[in-house]
Image 1 (tube, rainbow, N blue to C red):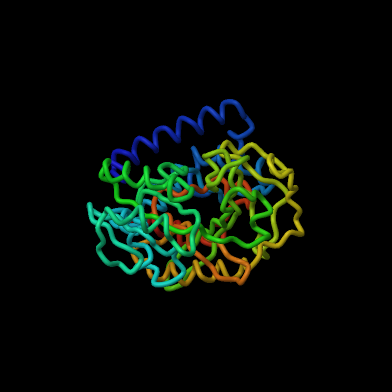
Image 2: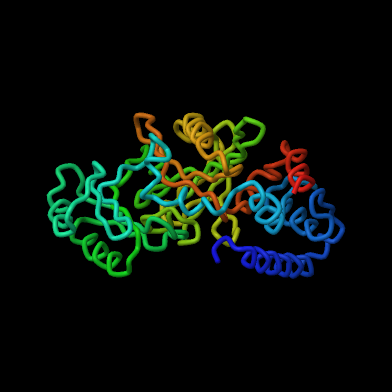
Length: 338
């Protein structure tokens, strides 16, 4: 019931209980106001003011964001297709990670989209002339880094056989080369830029961005897998603080001890944003998308994945304040029309 009506109602209830408990522990929040959710939204107004330092009545609660916004402007029946890593290169047309192996519905396709015999996969990986390490991941359902493995051919092949046995769709990809400045945050992981875009009335707007990095020794960037995120301002510089998955604030990475200076500029940030905005135009049925993007030393932008359902908002608001404040008229109109 990934995107079912029942799941959204259950989420709505749980989010409301969570917000109310937080409000009881922070009674000052009962004095706050919220323009979109006058009763329950006041807790988000106070919570994100404390985190970001920006006082506003335009914050979105999790419940409102997922059910009254994302739930109304994204067609979730298409989300599994759009999020399927085996189809993503065809959808994006460019800037996607190449597929070395694409396993769909029990059939193995190679990098040229030709059907190959499963018995040849191990040899192909061991004798790859370019790549020494690979990434194998399920084509859907990799939230939090689940079912994502990185290593040489001998490490990947057992997972190839396991995923086949479990009848997953999955892909084998080369490692993405990241810019040296992005690697500084955590050399062991691919550190990506999460870019949120909003499309309406023929325009695609950049809403908010942050850097995601792996935890100590981690090879994936997921915050929920022990990593951190740092806010990116509109000029490409960083906030001076980051958050873990529980919104605990820190000013340095626990592994590298790298501080988060506000004069640090994310390399090719504007180019990454522009690629995300251009690609969003291909997703006409989805008004809001969160992109995980990387860039190499030459400025080539690679889209690691796009998130068209259940993509979080909390960290964006914790860094930047009310990120939808310039789009409040549109958001209010959504709920008048539906």
